[in-house]
Image 1 (cartoon, rainbow, N blue to C red):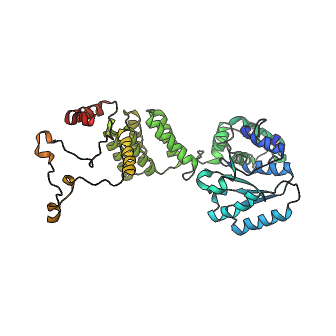
Image 2: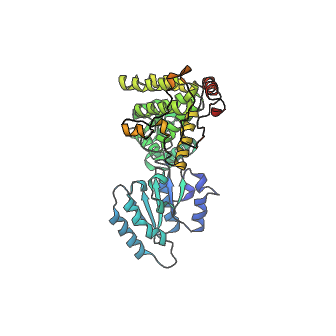
Image 3: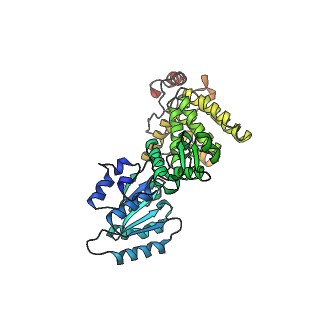
Length: 412
């Protein structure tokens, strides 16, 4: 079922449609090195093979899983010897290029830069994290998307009519929701499912129940070490920050069903409680931390309940990032001003010599004064800087009022 021309290629219209950049490059017969980044089963390898077939140029394939530096050099040597005058550079296709080590990627640089080979890499991971910068700078990056419903259904129809084995059978697509859900936008997985459910019969009525009973697995795609892991946790945190408890619970459920580590979710809730809710509701941090402890004590699957409780509480809480902004501003100020000396009256004086040098002298012990407060200098000499600014919520309004009462204009 693998197509050999762009007209038979399914999906990725933004790249291979009438105005797609890859179609224009192929039609102009001038291909530069690039990396295809996208989830499994969306046509990365197929696209590379179509390009090689269309341009009628030598096509070499390496797998980053099984190939080493020697294999890379052998292919480059063969490419040099097989290239003829005015012929397009041989194409070197590297599947799972993100698994190549730094030394393996380094061995490609010269050949790519000199045009000995045109590199087409395929990766399911963000290339900006996994591909070395010198190689990445020599390649364009094109993002491939999961196949949509229409693309997948079209692929199924094509398989049922064009594959000689399937075409000889009587197969009726009565329901397709489970078929599409389990495939998750992956054409390879979709065709594998079709093969599985039609393998033992010549007369098959495809229903959601049939697909679910044959597969017996979690249909959710969730790579705990991959891009989706970071995308979903990002959506989860942003839903909490945006005060949408329904969206936050949805993304929490996606992580739970996908097998995410509960401790990772709990840690992110503690961070969110500090960063996004902060002083607008200090109890949020207490509840998030309690949820973390509860998950560690009671385990799974009951641990989903305190996680959900903390998620809803954080999402519905008033928000403030004043402490987050304050520490960032203070860090930036410290980096700009360096190691300013601690005022003498704030220094510790554990020895007689230090006392003689004035360490701790004239320090005013706040608890000796009315209201447990006394005005004195706490910042280094010559520095008058305000890092914390109260935000507009009832909790911080009280704190701001107290600071104004104690410090007057110095803290407003």
